[in-house]
Length: 382
Image (cartoon, rainbow, N blue to C red; front, side):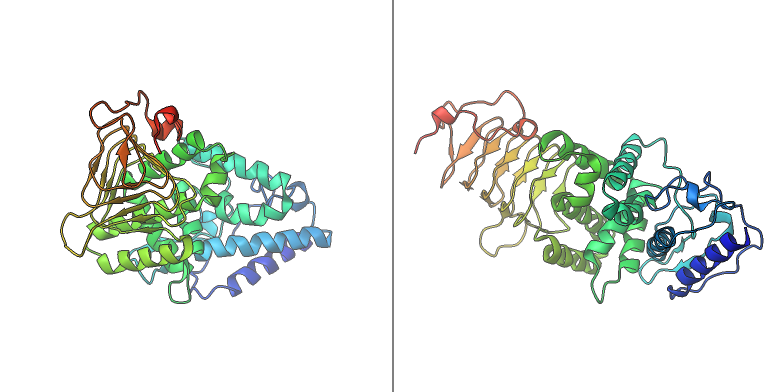
């Protein structure tokens, strides 16, 4: 017993010492270290980490140190769970450099997901299975997914680590992102709708956690949504700084003033540009190297308005305040300068309607959901 508690105390001291945050005093009593408190210790088996079973092997000690350090990273970023059984004994508060609100940062292991959020529960289970199947990813999956109590906190932590820079610290960004997402129901709804859109439309997506962790189009879109909220709140300087950083990291440039609906898929996303006054509806799918741009240097409303259910192929360029009707499709590489009727298909340079202007071929289902880029191919003319 004494050996185990001594080891645990040393690990805790190492983690606390690595943080520059000021800590409050902790209560004197603490719950016993049993496997019931630690159902997942950084992807390792928990039976070796009970009070009656000391950390005997160097492998177990190394795993404990890795878990302690990754737990400390999530703690310092301000996204660790407050509901863990350890929370009452290790709760601290630090003041964010950006947000004026104090952030609760318990030194705790996340153990219980929000059971009311089925999507988040699924993501956690996928991450747990992946960590067991690939031990090399266990520490990464723990600190990014399993250590957090909600999708919002996990996404804030992940984005903060992606977008951090020498002058935009991950702790600052995580605090900011968490604050915006937890007080914005519309961002929370879009966060989940966009994830479901990827899973249902992209055949390369094998799981929700895969999309969340590895699809930069999704990550760039969620960063835009945070920036958009900041823009609407009058924090334009911060929103523009975030846009610039997203452009540098993900190669996706979306102006924070643009309006984007829910259930949107940015597939691959590299080279995507969305201008200030552009509008994108719900359930839209857009591939890489697409531009929704303006013409000339005139101010005011100058960017395309894309309706619900639209599919825009790779490399397409849409210029000016044109309207792309609901359920329409823009072929890859097209240059569109005029309005496109609902359910129509436009291809070519300059863009022309398939079937002709008088009787264009009409789509019967939303192309954004079928992801069909070749319908009416026999009607294409060169």
